[in-house]
Image (cartoon, rainbow over all chains, first blue to last red; front, side, top):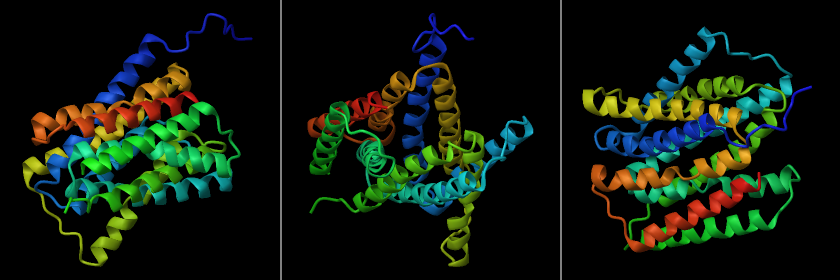
Length: 148
Length: 140
């Protein structure tokens, strides 16, 4: 049996990876906007898709790609991929037309939609923390919308 | 008239990725994250193929802009790996709120690199979104 009594909630390496995530995904918004100054959104979408494809090849080469599982999970994953494939061009079109400092904070509000859907369809609980979080996100979106 | 023609597409993105979050959560009951990443990646070419068939995809390769687009792709890919590494080493309760802060980096970089302005209202809106996301993340 594993001893979990000494487990730290967030190790130093977890914090480092989370910090790097913040920096890397933050840079992504600016890099997309810079690329969109010279390329159209279709071509930028193609580049991002191509890089993802390279990463899948790396994962497969390392032997980490395991596609086994029930059909149900695979079908849901394909649906998820289809939705993601729709979302990526939408973000690029939005960045093509609006400031990155407006589009990215609004686009970052997507967990609010996930939370509402999770409560409606996954029967997750609505807590005070979630309600307050939703209200803050909504307020922020309204403020950013007013600034636009 | 304010320029808000970006808003419908951003709302579309928010709804689509919001739905994606639910679908990923459902799929993770049966599959590993690498399988979900695979299916997402193989789905990307579908709209691109449709655009190509419709004649709306014109291949263009100016070196510097292509490099910038490739950097964006690398950031997206590496970001996903880093998130998984962070989640595998720390509680989602702490990792997710922390990672919600990434728009701050975009906004800070957008000022010198893109010449965008950070108004007080925009900064307040950004802070409100980040606080809200942190609260949503804490509830996970």
